[in-house]
Image 1: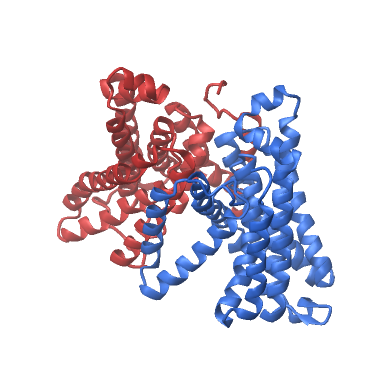
Image 2: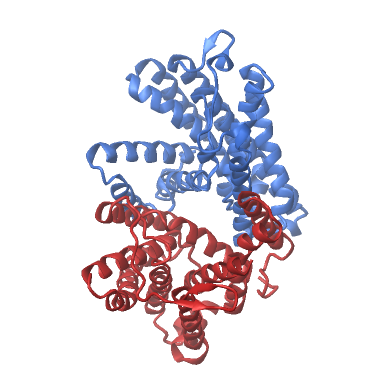
Length: 312
Length: 289
């Protein structure tokens, strides 16, 4: 985990940057979505993969970003840049607020407490129908999605923007996990009591990790709202808490690039399976079962275990 | 008010059965089984197929479903355990992925073979019990009684038989159990099957009241997880108490306090979260660990 890592990450980002010109339109559009969701998963990995916090409530933080940005753009009339910042902050604040209460618990109780807060948030979105329009969702007007004269609904514009956000998130994550603070986070995951004995405050470290993770989720949610012009209650449901967990586990928990790999793989797995058969989920489910049998630590995690040490 | 109480009792009874099934797999095997709700769904869907085979005699078909469906579902679960979970050594992270995969497979199988529509199953008998204040469906009362009887059986199995002893031993210390010549693999397969079977029984019981649908597994999964944790891991009484609490809370909050249903559910959800924040081991769980 120490040293290295920068080169492969830079390589990945370079390949993604080349995609702006090289990818066919269909995959170009797909990758915008994948990068935004991978940002979300990268944040989830900071809490789950590195700090060992199995949260089932990240949909709340994603939704905070989603609605934070949407309301900032529609009700307050802020420009997209400010709306993005508002959504990001909303995600971080929501995570910190949940963390203050939820981090009094650990393990399975933490799972359920975060799940309950997220469910309460989802129900609140449904209950506030007059503003959120529930499952139907808010559609952001095009005027709210024009960033300095560029139209965010245009793939040629939002691809570089999504890449910039994802790159910032990925590099920050790499920097974080290689820093002292990152190693303390891993210490919390591996042995909380020993870390406490060495003088670290588990509550503070975990709260910080959760808040950072929530900030990522908020940024991803805000970017999602602005780029795809839609904020709906289904994006706040429990499914959107389980998906980042799945992506992280498939790609490799506790690896920097794992969440992106997992997200990319699941997206194209579903895409490919639905082109083969109408029984999409059957193929996806079987693929997951096979994958987990051969790579129980996720793709990058298992490769790294098998000796490909340079993987980030 | 009383009607809400009765409806709450019916859901609590079914929830308790499902949750005890989850509590067994969770408690003994330490496995987060995301596919538990799909076992529930499978029970309901299979019940529809079985009763459909006996169009003339709903009671006979239903009785048969009550026996056959849990066995089928248990067999599927045992198969999944032996083919997949066992090879993962029951490690938490890979099993989550594996059970999500299993969830997808089972859901798609139900969608492809059963179809996207919700389908009703006729109740085996139809009479109303005349209470002093109002009439009430006799079948629903029987569901409550049947669930109680089954829970009693599970309790007896766990605390009064050798099988239960072996299960508890495995739960407390897997390696020590192995040292005492307990076939841990067999215990795990059995527990996984039993847990899935209990979910299926619960589903068969409820399916004449609520229709069978291929997406019906999500709610029971979430609710039984909550019930198991709130009740305290490994505490059968706690699970029962929590099931009662959760089953009754929605209905009572909305009728007693005249809250709109969604607001009542928000309140109930937050209440559950706060209970755990201030009592992480659950209502009746032991403090340590």
